[in-house]
Amino acid sequence: MVPAYVPNPVAAVCGGGMPIDFGKTYADGRRILGDGKTYRGLVCGVCAGIAVGFLQIWLFGTFGWTFLPQQTLASIVLLAFGALLGDMGKSFVKRRVGKNRGESWPIADQYDLVAGAFILMLIFDPAWIFTNVTWQILIVILILTPILHRTVNIIGYHIRVKKEPW
Ligand code: CTP
Ligand code: MG
Image 1 (cartoon, rainbow, N blue to C red):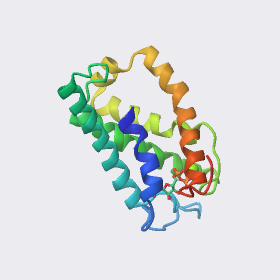
Image 2 (spheres, rainbow, N blue to C red):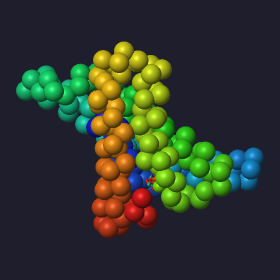
Image 3 (tube, protein in one colour):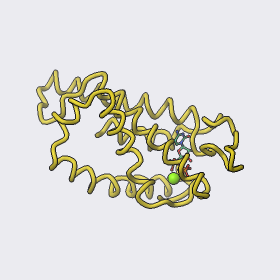
């Protein structure tokens, strides 16, 4: 999951500039995605996720770290891109239910990246999921994700990278 966990914090550090929705509003008069989703955040986040994925592949091959999952180019791209696609999908629905950018939306804010990464993986490389994500691993992911999410966001808030601690 590391290539899926890295894009969000990196987007928070590097994000800014042109929003993905170009500032446009939807039929309901609210922003399509909002200013919290930018091209710079998306590109930097996905690239960083892919970079740590390559690091995993290298560690696996060079040092025989076989406890790592068998990452491939496809798996790291799907995990990294899927994470931020899930984040964007979440923001789209979040705007539709009337929540402002940055407002807290429990469950969705924490699991959007898992849902996005898994959905993309199930569409394009389902064998990877069934080989690498056992029931035990899935349970660990579901427990660890909100804890990691909250911890990283509190740190991000204190070092003034994030506006909100969630
Ligand atoms: N970010 C970005 N581009 C992305 C994702 C995130 O630039 N594709 C940056 C934005 O600066 C954003 C910050 O990372 O404010 C934190 O991300 P997140 O908490 O997902 O966004 P929110 O601002 O809370 O917006 P939303 O309510 O839509 O989730
Ligand atoms: Mg947020």
